[in-house]
Every structure is written in structure tokens, then in C-alpha cells.
Length: 86
Image (cartoon, rainbow, N blue to C red; front, side, top):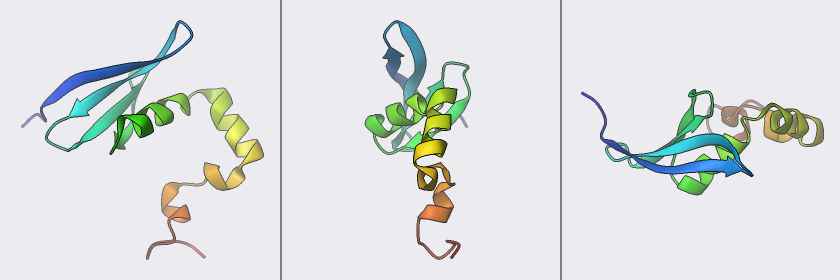
């Protein structure tokens, strides 16, 4: 059964479309898609979805890895929850 959705917003930098945000009504979140149409993830707020779209750009990922290596780790390793390493 398909999840009800509706277009919410497009994310731009100057005149370049970086991606789109779709409101997922049945899941209670906002799904982010990069410009190449791959799904970036489901987020609780449109602001978080937009931030994830901007981080899919190659230079953003490279810069984050160089200057903030702790941010380039997978989220499950940072959480400190039961499944955290360390």
C-alpha cells in the first residue's frame, strides 16, 4: 500500500536545484531526495531534510570529513545508545 505524500519544497543554492522535500503524511515526516533522485532519508522536520540534502554534495561531504571527522561517522556510532561502539 503506497504511503500518502505531497510535495513540500525544493531546495536551491542560487539557481541550482539541490533536491526536493516530500511530506510523508502516513509516516509523520519529511523525505529528502537529492537532485539525482536518490532518497537521502526520512526526517522529523523540513529543516533537517533540507540540511541533509545540502550535505549530499561531494564538496560538503569532503569538507566535513576533513574538518569535523566526528560528524562524518555513521549516526549509530555517535548516538551513545545501547548499540554505540566504545
